[in-house]
Image 1 (spheres, rainbow, N blue to C red):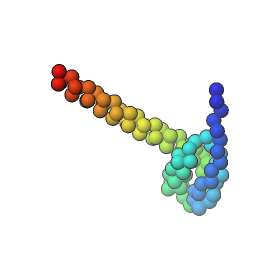
Image 2: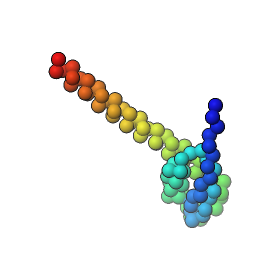
Image 3: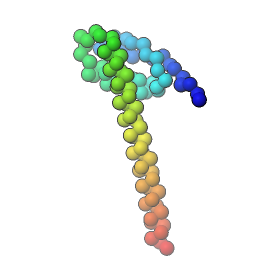
Image 4: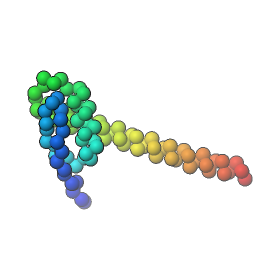
Length: 91
């Protein structure tokens, strides 16, 4: 079993910089930080609450990305099925 590669990221939430260590992609971390930043009140100073929110946002974004991948895969499968149906109609 391969251990995940942990990377360090800097994100800005509520005007404050946070260091995050994660095995998630930079794209996912940044999208999650933007989501939390859009929801967090700038006066919130509870670091634990912000980092917990960031973790939850990462989980949400990861699921959203996975759903999008399924939609793309489903579209490709439907295209293949449609092509096969058109071929079979010709014969």
